[in-house]
Image (cartoon, rainbow, N blue to C red; front, side, top):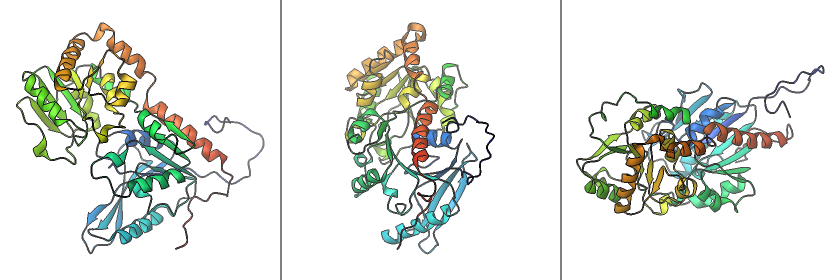
Length: 405
């Protein structure tokens, strides 16, 4: 037992068994590593402290007559974490595409000798990878992808197959847990966590970013992906009702047209920012916003930014996302509003809170955040995986078993 948790045990008996090989985790993700820093990046960076992590991204198109290949690079954050990007000929038929991905995967992992953990964020990568037999298969359902815009046709079928194959299922929030808990015997809820040390930098005055420093106060801000989950109409109405407020929007625009974004003199789209830059922007805001649309795509979300905003010392105004209401709605520093009128009124209350951080609301938020960290979440996940690896008998589960063609 002690050796499992890394405590050295001295024994006079010389161990003569085979040397244990290090574990390799292969993460199949629909999110690019350098897109936005969220759940996959937080967890995989931490797993890479103890094992080799291969982060397998979606393919990139190359010329129609070029040969498929993998582009491999080390992540800046860890020497044990490498990003693998398949490059496939543009327009390749689906069957040939899956065959090429399968061959690239086999070649890349052929030298692995130790245990393999296959970790899936998307069921759509199962078709080219299901011929391998990992020691442990994890499905980390961070979103209900079938509810998203442009969801693949067979996603639900592949998800059921993945759930049937998985040894353990993790969910990114309570609503997702309720939707998945009866579909597998081992489902665990791991809601969004926070790197408090990183975001608490925003509580001290930072050097103002150049593209934000001249924006009038008060500033109400949002960072994240701006897509079909974002309530553009709500933002437009709020900005119209309060022309003296600056609404600062950070993040990439995805799956919606730039032309559909509301344009007013007091709405400022500053583009994508790195994870390292976020505290500096957050520091210059008075209120943090989560103007999510109430539609199918937000039915199961558990926004990571809720605890991040609070860790940065900012009161939050959100639409009534189920997991936000459930986990944070009782906090004085989190205001819930549905209509534009309610949203603006909640922002007024939040602005008053921001002028009085010593009033007790921030201490209340800090108490709640003290039990939520990515380090703790990853450690609990690692313990569950370690138990699964520990139950396998040596030699009975090969790291790689290629099915017969």
